[in-house]
Length: 63
Image 1 (cartoon, rainbow, N blue to C red):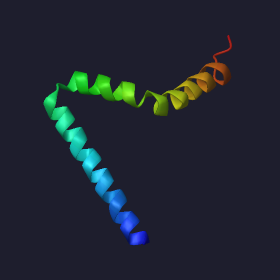
Image 2 (image 1 turned 180 degrees about the horizontal axis):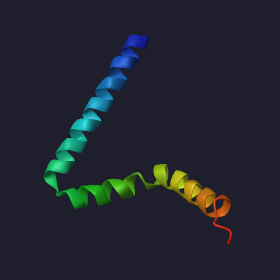
Image 3 (image 1 turned 120 degrees about the vertical axis):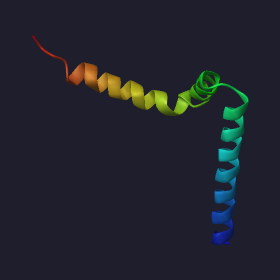
Image 4 (image 1 turned 180 degrees about the vertical axis):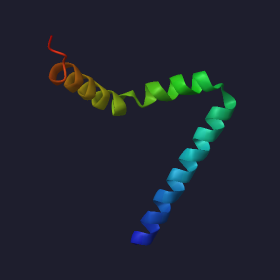
């Protein structure tokens, strides 16, 4: 049973990569980047915001 789930996960990832390749081939690099940046914003934005917050609050140059 576990090997079936493993192969299913590999197949899903492979299909996703094929989708990315065809999506990139159908548009230019800027449109592809804008589209996937907007789609994945909810994943990377909280980490980026936390990094900025820590950098600006704790590592401020106190003159």
